[in-house]
Length: 363
Image 1 (cartoon, helix red, strand yellow):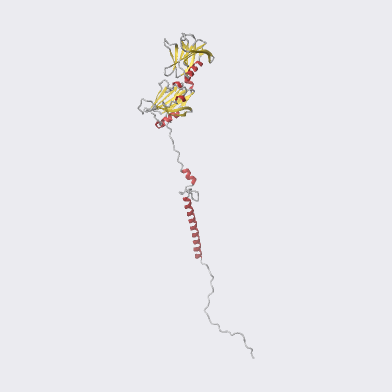
Image 2 (cartoon, helix red, strand yellow):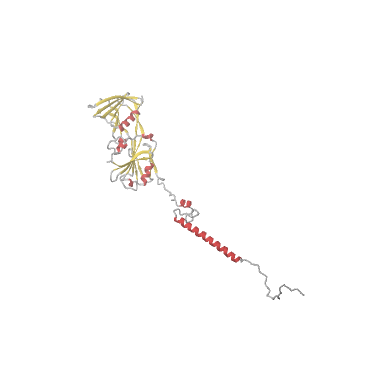
């Protein structure tokens, strides 16, 4: 007897459509490329927006600089600063073609426009005339004064330039200044048609520069200023000259002395008390030379007599004082020649002293 078969009963297999083999799964390259490009665009947009926001913020700030250290417009900050500086202007020298006047007697020089006319015939003054201006007044006059006593407008007989200019009735808006390295003052004299005057002082000598028709500082032109700035002192050794003569009275030998070129030696008259006189530019007698041998008559005065020496030459000095002031002073040298001082004051004392110290006797 057969043993029962416990294996399941096999059923016939039904026929099915053939199954296609599985295809390998692939990722689309086009799709991945699109996604990557999108990410890049987003990142780039973020960067651009960030830069724009930062740029706007800096634009509103005081610097006005962008991220690259440049101002808006593309120039760097340094370049902008350099380029925004005012370009240097080319200045024309107005005096380039001017002429130069040099006075070898009084020791100064000054430049003036080439079309101006110079008149140097005055005793101690030189005028500069502008032909374009029809006026009886010269545009500029330069005067040389040997000392303060002969300075223009010294009506108060001041003994120094600073004291003279304290006269505020005569001198207006006076200020100190330097011209060509020389100490001096600027001032105005007169009302309508006033003078703008520069007073310069060197070794007790006075130089005066007159600009006519200048009522105030606003009347001074560029040309006036350029003339003034060109003024210079030159060799002043020629500012003195020598007088040679032979004594007529108590001393008959030859002698000489030096004196300022702004003075002159003139002969005395028949009834004068001296053979010669030293006179200033105003024809005032300052010193009598080689006195006539007659008695000195100065009644009512107190006589002070003393001995002085002038560069090795002894002299007896007779000074007559009346009412506290000297009114006559006579210098009698041992050689016999004598001098009489006729004008007084510190400035005149200096003039006379310079003459006496320069006396030389030939024998």
